[in-house]
Length: 153
Image (tube, rainbow, N blue to C red):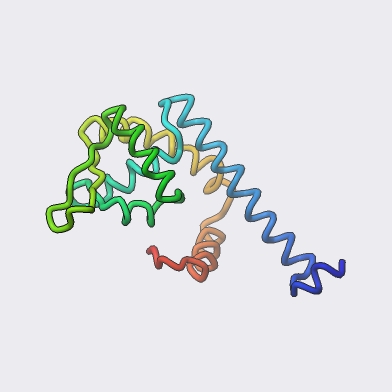
């Protein structure tokens, strides 16, 4: 395996990287399927609604929202268009920046989020947390904190 050595990766390091990717994809696919089946709500939409719900006044500037979710700015714009058509979010002009827009969680969006959240949390528990002990969860948190460039708590 000259390629691995040339790039400074051992077989074990590459295996850990791939296991982390597979775990993330497996869990994400499960959450997506459960949310779609039970609530007709894609995971990306759930994430946007949750981000808005967790902010004061249930709103964020589009740029800030794009930084919080795992979508490109154009992907977020298309998603907000769909959520707005469904009445789950609205857009508001920013008073101090004529070019700025806020995405705002509507009451209908908050209700849809409240319906979907138990499904989401059950999925996290069954696909991730129930497979680990309390000590392992603390270890994973400590390890991931080293990788978290946004400094989430």
